[in-house]
Image (cartoon, rainbow, N blue to C red; front, side, top):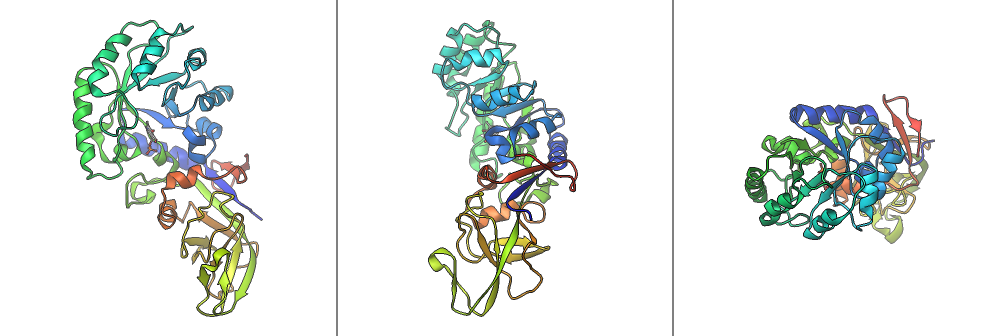
Length: 367
Ligand SMILES: Cc1ncc(COP(=O)(O)O)c(C=O)c1O
């Protein structure tokens, strides 16, 4: 019986990388591997993305683990270093660093490094999260110019705040600021995340930075992966472990939030928030058993959920259940849980066994 298994289809991952390249044929690909490759398992995903040009992570520990696993491609620390001591490791391991504050820039310039490092200079074009103010960009470039710590020319990068919403006015504003910065810079540039790769060809430049679309999830609001010919990489599965009859008026689960309006049959499934299935998935969230969708009934517990199988006898103990993935879009489950697919994927817990495969029938256990 499959109990809380995440099947990771590496052929879907490779297909999605092809889609990235179809949209941005002239750009290099910085594939996002942060947060355990969006919950998919960093090392396996990295090994399977040999067609990418570089990898992006958010923590030094993630980069160190990739190097320890034998990954030799460029790895970019998207938030740079948090402590100045980390610069020695960055330099020794041949990692790339983002610089996004004046303080980081200064610390980088003053450091004595064993090897020069590729720098991605992050400028805030309007998201107002990370990045130097645009007015400091030229000065930062001048400080880094010909500096022995800098390998090659710094790469200009910025990040969209609302690319998932094609019509959002912030997009145009950010384009305007970015284009002015570009004119001050002769080196490479990077702007596009997944949504921009699909919606804004004019943002592709030298490097695109796909994350969620690689994992087969739509980055654009109110659309599904299939709308962009993306294939889900993760399918979260478990099994039916009990069939229960409840009488009209009886409630189900903690808090008695679901009450049977007639005598009903329920199936209990071994998946819960202890596995990363979202606790706030509401009554009615679809769950797939034997190709048929059934609604969630009652609160999600730590280890179990119940679904209303509506008195059918076509569901039995031991039947395989799909919580999201192939044939059940995670975008839809995220809507029911009032969250985003990113959070669902990253939230899959260590208790869930990962099985990797290149084709659909050859999943290999690997946690
Ligand atoms: C700097 C940066 N670039 C690219 C991405 C990839 O974004 P997405 O997963 O939406 O493609 C992220 C993710 O948050 C990011 O922080």
